[in-house]
Length: 248
Length: 254
Image 1 (cartoon, rainbow over the protein chains, first blue to last red):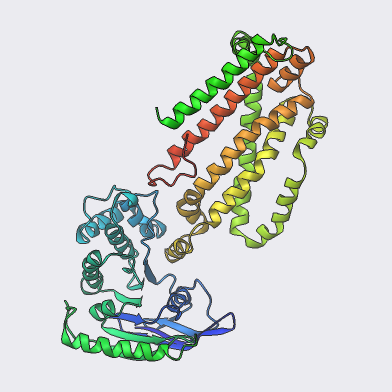
Image 2: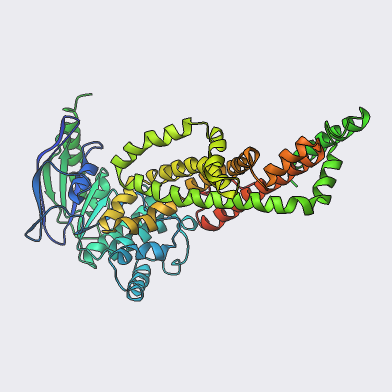
């Protein structure tokens, strides 16, 4: 289980986090849904140790850790592929920095390329392929971290809606086939409803969980599932209600 | 040939033609202004005289560039990796630019003699600054998200430098180097003016004193060609090392 408790951080005298708590069970897909500017991205920075928290503790699998920098993999809305490396070389980076044997790592990359539907593009450079394929490559790289916990920072928000749909099912694969624990931040209600097991609705400044929803509908889910639609209007109401309290 | 190129060539020939015609019509003495035809023929016919000097100047420029790189690259890396060092050294770098470097030339000759060492140092002092600054800017322009990614991969400083920062900064580095190689030529020539036993700058001063203006112009032509060659060499290096990026070159090569 990932457990965050009492996380505290002040930016420019604004308490962005004051005693933030979050618990995510293993192999679950948790989605943190909140308005933009509520501190979602800073939350990942605190988790990964990029910025230092002023208080609070993080534990993973029952062991308290300083941060998740060496425990979690990370996927961003930008694919973050390096333009001077081929797709395969980009995917190999985590193995390279971890000192994994190259041939073995390359074999793993090849398998993942097949699974993600970009087999045959190993030697292409990022600018030669589409945004969707780049993001699939980023998925391969994320899996090559070989870490059980994956942090997803609005990973699909830069994609068009058709590409997005096929990538959503690949994200679900991370959970069902690769047995990862996923924590995703998002501001897209529809996407959150399609993917999440546990949905956390956030409020801004300081960031708090206003509501936790457990979704039981089995995968694959459909947009027009009446249960999801009912939840959607409920969630939107919560989010809007919260926005009313935000000054300006 | 594109319209722009055609126009450029026409303009060039028009200017050269005006020059040539002006010299002939007004019978301008050769020691005041020789026509382009004489300059080119002097540059070619006097090649056996000019070549050894050009070799010396070329050597000074290349060694100057190498020396500047040997200092600028480690310095930029150190300043990048250590923010207090950057803060501490920045004023010195800026101050070093406030000194009119050419005014140092006589001193360098006093300290290092009439040989090539003083010219090498002169050239490298001039180009060291643009290279350091552009490389440092290049490192710093690396997007935060990429740094976070490498942080999560547990990559150390040198690994991140090799895989991320250095290739990221290459376009900036080459932008600085391009500025650098053109001014390096000026540095070497000025060093030679002040005091030297060979080199194109030395040859120019000698020719000027004897009113051999055609030779002065021929040397200038040689210097320009050397400068252009260096410019294209950097462009070629840049293209080779920054391929595969889908048009992310710092400059559009001519």
